[in-house]
Image 1 (cartoon, protein in one colour):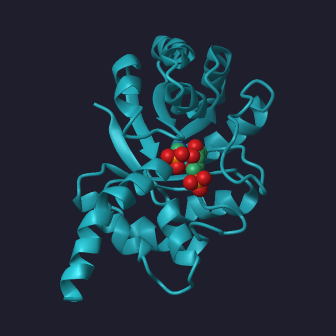
Image 2: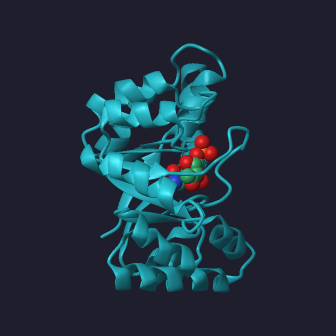
Length: 237
Ligand SMILES: CC(=O)[C@@H](O)[C@H](O)COP(=O)(O)O
Ligand SMILES: NCC(=O)COP(=O)(O)O
C-alpha cells in the first residue's frame, strides 16, 4: 500500500497572499486527514514564503497521521525538526532562491554531511528520507548514509508523461529495484497528479509514500469551482 501525504505549502501560499488566516492552514490539515489522507507534508523555506516555521509548530501536535517536514538541513531547519519531532524528515538540497525543489542530493559527494544529519534525526526517533534524482547510483550510495528511505524526484517522469512519453518511468523502475535489493524504503514526489499517478504506482513496486501538493491543490480548485459558483448564484437570487 502506498500512503498519500498531502503537501499543504500551496494552501499557505494562498493565505500569505492576503495576510490574515484564510484559508486556515491548520484547519485544512485536519480536514485533509479527515478526508482520508495518510500524511501531511510541509516544506518550510528560510524566507517563509509558503509554510512558516510557526505553522510547523502548530501543526506538529495537531497532525494525527504522518507528519513529514521537507527541507534543506541548514541549522535553523535542523532545530525546527528536532523541536517538533515529525514522523519523517525529508532532506532536500534546494537553494534559498529556488522557486521549488529542482534537484536531488548527490549522495556520493555529500555522504559525510548526510551521515551526520541523518544520525542526529534518527537518534531523535525521526524517520529520514533523502530526495534524489532517479539515478540508481544515487540510491546505492544513499544506503551508506544510514537513511531509512529515499524520495525519488518525479519531475522528469511527470514532464515526459505529459508529453505522451511513457518511457520516462524506466529510470524510476530501475531505482525501485535497487531500493528493494538493498532494503531501503521508497517515497516519491514532485509534479505527481491525477493524470500521472496511476501509471507511476502500477510500475513502481514497493512504493511506500507519495507526497503531492501543487497538482492536488490545483485539481481541488478546479473540481470545486462549479459547486462554489452555484452556491453564490443561489445566494444572489
Ligand atoms: C521536495 C519536493 O519535491 C517539492 O515538491 C516541494 O516540497 C514542493 O514544495 P513547493 O510546493 O513549496 O514548491
Ligand atoms: N515531496 C514532494 C511534495 O511534497 C509535493 O510536490 P508537488 O506535488 O507540490 O510538486
